[in-house]
Amino acid sequence: MRVYFSSNRAGTYQVYSVDSDGATAPTPVTHDQDHHYSFVMPSPDKTRLLCARLPGSVKASMGTDAAQTQDIVVLDATTGVVTSIIADRAGLGLTELGHAEW
Figure 1 (cartoon, rainbow, N blue to C red):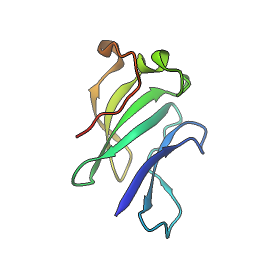
Figure 2: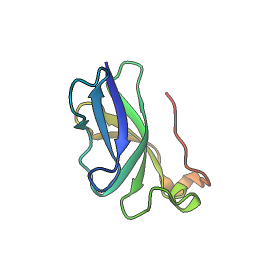
Figure 3: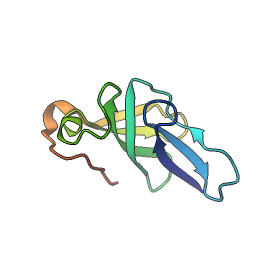
């Protein structure tokens, strides 16, 4: 089983995966320095990841400002490629950062 998480070890928050037994080092799933990725939720079949995406120019901890620039996206769990944008920042009117669930 794989565990997915976000970390800023590469400068912006990226998605990483690791075996649940911790036997291997974390592997980056995303390689997109133009965005921060957070609140990672694997799909029930573990082939896709649902997560929040912020522009890399926005501080990931900026509350309302960050929430208003957040997209909710689906990534391929293997390649990290965005396969769809569920909600784009233009029409959300969010005031809080948060996560989506499948």
